[in-house]
Length: 227
Image 1 (tube, helix red, strand yellow):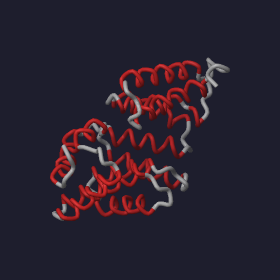
Image 2 (tube, rainbow, N blue to C red):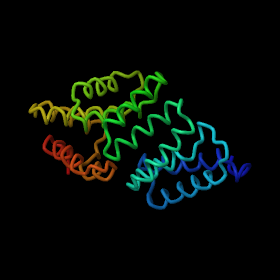
Image 3 (tube, rainbow, N blue to C red):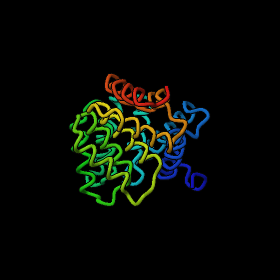
Image 4 (cartoon, rainbow, N blue to C red):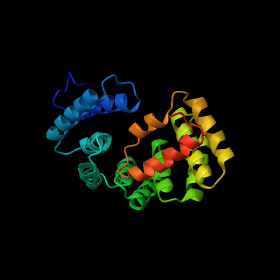
């Protein structure tokens, strides 16, 4: 696609997403270099964009890259611009919500993600996974448990989604004083992802509120997650 349309918005956006996914899925041997390449393609797409379609809005990938690099102010700007361009698109709305959560605005983020789920009922699993983080930050544990159990009951079997659900359940159980349940849930996480560690999660959790991150990591460490 890129060879046929080197100046195309869609082709350059697709390349940007490809490098982003490589980093997110931990397939990259040089994450910083691949983030740079992803941003290069996304910014090229942005420069070509006049009327941007929903599927290939460069602002969405730029917002995600900003979150990876913990550039929260520019992430908000990109997410809001994408939302202005595609206000009825569920994925764009959810992305804006996730950026708000990462920036330390979980209440606003949860509202946007719930709106996205109503807009597109057949939503991908990353949306409830992101919603789960927002609810945990708000300590809305009853709602968070519903979302976590929904991920576990989904017809779509995903180790990543199930691991996120069990981690959340472990953290909530720990904070509620149910240490045996917390350890059991961490055991489930390690069955799915045997190499998962507290240090790895610390690197992956790109939330601005580092006190919240450390609080949850402490809960996991005390429940049997390897350091």
